[in-house]
Image (tube, rainbow, N blue to C red; front, side, top):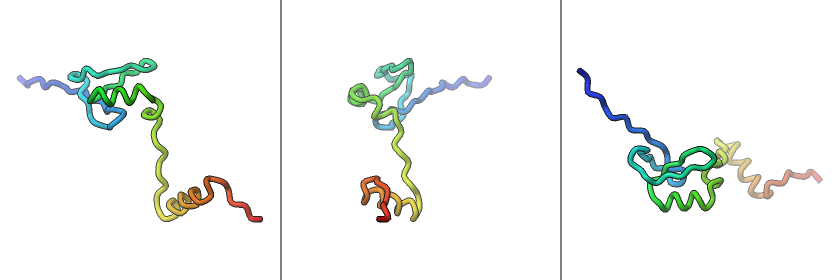
Amino acid sequence: MQKQQKQTITDIDPVCGMKVNQRITKIVTTIQGHKYYFCAEGCRKAFLADPQKYLIPPPSKKKGLWGRYLERLEKATAGKSMNCH
């Protein structure tokens, strides 16, 4: 007979990015029907203070020489388009 292994169900703490075992942790909160698991009470409090900050993914960085150039251009012009005249 084969031994049955206990399956661990992990989730990612949305604040710090740490893996959290859903079966062990007791620090859980539910927002709009979705459960979020946390590694510590401090992470849960930070999440509850501003959930949207942690639920919206950060914008992706532009890669390569051209991407870095465009990022510097946006920073230098404060995101405004360049005018020819």
